[in-house]
Amino acid sequence: MPAQLIDGKKIADKILAKIAKEIPKLKKRSGLAAVLIGANPASKLYLKLKEKACQKAGIDFHSYFIEKDCSEKQIIEVIDFLNNDPDISGILIQLPLPKKFNTDKIIRSIAPAKDVDGFHPQTKVTSPNVLGIIELIKSTGVNLKNQKITILSNSKKFAEPFKKLLPQSKISHLKPQTSNLKTQTQKADILIVAIGKPKFIKPSMIKKDAILIDVGINKVKGKTIGDIDLACDKVAAWRSPVPGGVGPMTVAMLLQNLIKMIK
Image: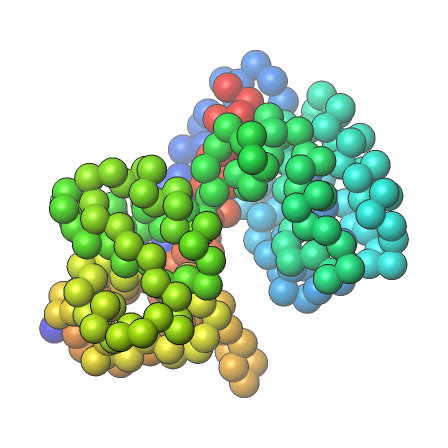
């Protein structure tokens, strides 16, 4: 039996509908400000998806477009203005930034109480990307106790929140260049892949009836594909598709973070 697809869009729409019911009950106006530096086409698309989700949920969305030849000082001035705007409850900086900018410095200039992406060291919320992935896993109905969750990513930092949020599971982190990678990934009950390498994970690399979460976004011949080869569906029990899996869930959890901040 082929793997069942985890419909991230369907789950995300339910979350957005729930948020839309909460908005009128809030004492404070809900406003999300998104700052885009430069004109990266992919970043523009992601911003549009966030704006669309805000419209569905009844949240005020404000876009700030800044030319890539501006100074770091100008960007921080815009963020400082938003930090002090009472109508703005959350701020996000659309990443990646043009290479000449210090990403950490810019993110640190966001007031922790308004950092919806959970990037600031003193933030009160968790990365919506991580929260979205966990919701996708839970939607399969799996009992997470003692599940071996393997996270394959370029950064160890990406794996850290999972250890905190899923203490009942056995979590390990691997990089693409890890020796005996195939042997390690074959042991995973749940495999989360975020490396930006199209079709990297092959059927021979996964455990029978594993749950596969594909975080990869790769453009190949004009198509968006993930890090997991679709042939893995012959072996896995569940797989999150690209697009339509982690992406819409990340946006939904971003707005959930915003509501949490307002409350």
